[in-house]
Length: 183
Image: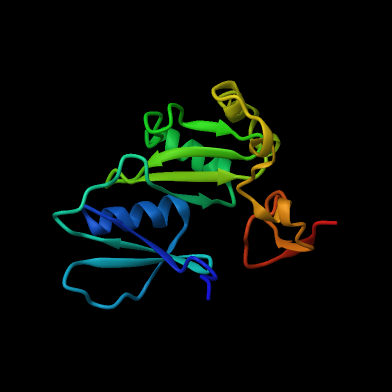
């Protein structure tokens, strides 16, 4: 017996509508029907997974726990997050890192102060102005052994023949409209 996938992640919201709007407008999630609970909830679709928001007066956002989300247009999310001052450089000492495999992590805070990691598979495809702000993780923590082959994108490691591709650059992000061979 084993788990086969992550179905959903639940995080708290101070204001359900404000938090739902954040995920809908910044990250393109789609609000879907949710059952009625003893407290307010909103369910959002993210590909085949879901993000559940709930309002509870006794809940607080953890400082370091986070959800990592791949996007289909990192540049657009970056510029909007920068404009709205959503980036967080306190949890992991920088708002953006380039990992040893060339992928990118950017940290944001949502309206309820939840930490959100926005991921991108290839720093080389980003706007040059964004690349200038990237800090190689290896510049802050020495990378050796297995750390050098670590990846957020398991398709790279697993040698998957076909992976979903981004319509913008063909980078391998999940999109409902296309696939390509990795070979």
